[in-house]
Image: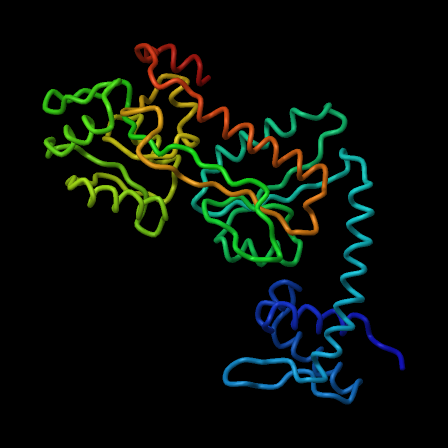
Length: 332
């Protein structure tokens, strides 16, 4: 019997993804077209591959057997592709990095810059970033459409591994030019003294992440525990927008140190409280288990870890802010 391998591949993807809709999106074809192709395969094999159970399509016993053979066949092809890819010169390699929505892209760009600088100019791989919801990115990783994921959440799936899990301080920050005679918070104060002063200052204005961002729920819990009233003047799901608003003296914010390290180094922002911050913010770099021995991905993983470690050692106190005209020259 002659088999149509395109139809078998469509069936493999549909069974692996657990649904026709997800499979159609992955294959970049319409759902009716995929359903039609699967129908042709069933007719050619003279078997029923899927059956309706409630509102879902599930594999029939015969479909499970055929899926087992398809998995062996196509996973073997994937392994061959991995061997070919890993032996490709780094200059011709492409590394696809997925970044979940809550992660600041400027931080990731800095990781990428340090990563590429580890290679000579003529040996640098090509890096492509894509952002999205974590579940979407995990689907892409599942089908090996991306190589790694950077997220603030743990990845709990046996198919994937966490290459790096780091924790950085969440710090209280404000503009270096900020002044409020009604609120006596200065650099060098302990966390306890800072919290006591914030509890007394009813007119403190806050710049916070949007409510659907995980960091916001951490901040809300912290405010409740310390009985701090929050007068919110600006909310955003963009970390860069929050950082800019703090820089523009609109108010205070709690932000992970890795997202404001350059602003602190440049003396545009200052952090308040202890060097350890007020709590820890987790970051995870994950990949498909098949890629754990890939030297390029491991180099990216080491770069990610080293940069996070460097950020945690940034000194807390700096001298007075750079004058405005000097800032303009530096930014130019």
